[in-house]
Image (tube, rainbow, N blue to C red; front, side, top):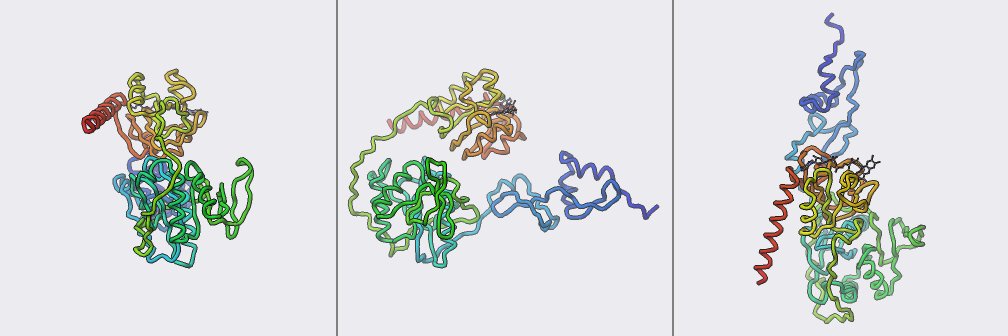
Length: 416
Ligand SMILES: Cc1cc2nc3c(=O)[nH]c(=O)nc-3n(C[C@H](O)[C@H](O)[C@H](O)COP(=O)(O)OP(=O)(O)OC[C@H]3O[C@@H](n4cnc5c(N)ncnc54)[C@H](O)[C@@H]3O)c2cc1C
């Protein structure tokens, strides 16, 4: 009797049932060890063995060589802690790769982060000590330590602020004359696309535009109205498309000032024939969803619709909706976000009472920061969000409006 192989059916059931309270604990104990299957045969756990990498991302440990128990089970508190990344330093750089820093609202755009990722790849591949130099006109409202900038040249002043491509081009020409960067990389979108073309003319270089892949000697660039690719030699001025490279994420970068001997003399006057008359105020409701930077989106969890519209107006946000909110007639069809609606790329997307169905999540894949307001702390939107508020949507929107009104009143009294 004692030599018979027996299996514990209850233990086997717990190991299969991911919702059982002891599932994680017992799986961790048995990780890597074979268990006995229903036929009595020894079996290895076929379920993936997860680990947390240095960047905090969950990774599959294919070799089953994890921590003591094979799986590093982190508590939710630990999982939310930001891991301290190693510092990438370039001491006494002998060469530079210059990147024009494209910002929106004082933050680097995701396109710019892709370009910085490409610049770091080029810098690391070189034998010479090469630093990535970020050139920026304007303010920064967030830390750029993870973005991939070794040296930062930030210039502020009325002649550079706003829309000033002539002044920016002259600044880049001064950088060129002083530092002779190996390459100039710019995002091929918005104002930096214009600057790149101006810079090419100013430096007498034929810029490579629409670049999406750099190979050993040649590059691939999208051409023919985005319908075909051409292969051409590298240029010193390259305008890169979004997703040309992965953004940096494994290191912190210094983003320090230029070496004292490399300091630029910026005192010479800048001549610009352009006058920036400022931005034109637009009604957020008129902005097409695909172009909106800030979206307040409503789902089945919104019960006070007048309040939702009032909150959107007060916040200055464009309105979006889940398919259920649209199907129920609360929002127009052109406001539906998702796989069968509009794919949005807002910098901030606030999802009010939206569960986070896969079709909806597909539509917000490119949003930078997602904020979830929901009653259900376990819903998929909460898992996707960078910030979550759990509670009744009407109460949270009411509090939010109070805060915005108080802040506006404070600003008015400060200005008076
Ligand atoms: C082919 C196909 C295509 C689809 N395309 C799309 C699409 O493009 N876009 C899309 O959005 N959907 C799409 N759907 C529908 C999708 O599957 C979901 O049904 C839909 O997204 C759910 O919308 P919801 O999250 O608003 O509603 P629900 O799933 O009902 O979720 C409501 C959420 O509100 C929360 N809630 C409830 N009351 C409150 C309260 N008082 N305060 C705070 N929170 C509260 C709940 O906890 C829940 O999380 C598609 C479906 C199919 C089959």
